[in-house]
Amino acid sequence: MSEHKATIRWTNDGGEFLKGRYSRAHTWSFDGGISVPASSSPAVVPKPFSVAEAIDPEEALVASISSCHMLTYVWLAYREKIEVESYEDEAVGHMTKNAEGVPWMSTVVLHPKIRYRGDKRPSREDELRLHEGAHHDCFISQSVKTEITVRLEGDA
Image (cartoon, rainbow, N blue to C red):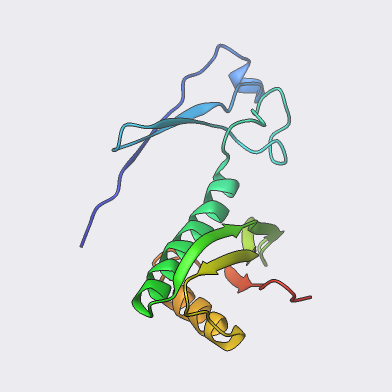
């Protein structure tokens, strides 16, 4: 179907590599020409060996799940002639340990706040159905074993 590439670059900064005292800062570059600073999460590797301001793999996974869900939701709404004005999501991923004690992203909770315009407004049932469809059709959510939950505004 399609191919997607990312180039990851890391260079030893001259730290004490064999003692684990080296920078985890690196760069992600994409085929469109953009490069972004990346690092391990300070929750995994303490500063100064990680860079809090850089994207870490855990954040990127949460953002990928949220972004794919949003794009699919907006597309499904478009197909139903429901005009979306804005979509904002403060997605939260939770790391836990699996049965072998290995950390993994066990859950991601999406908190979409969607604004609509135009005459056709979705009911709550329509929104739930669209979110279910977005989860089903999103290739990222279909690619991970992480449990993904959507909490709409007003949900506890």
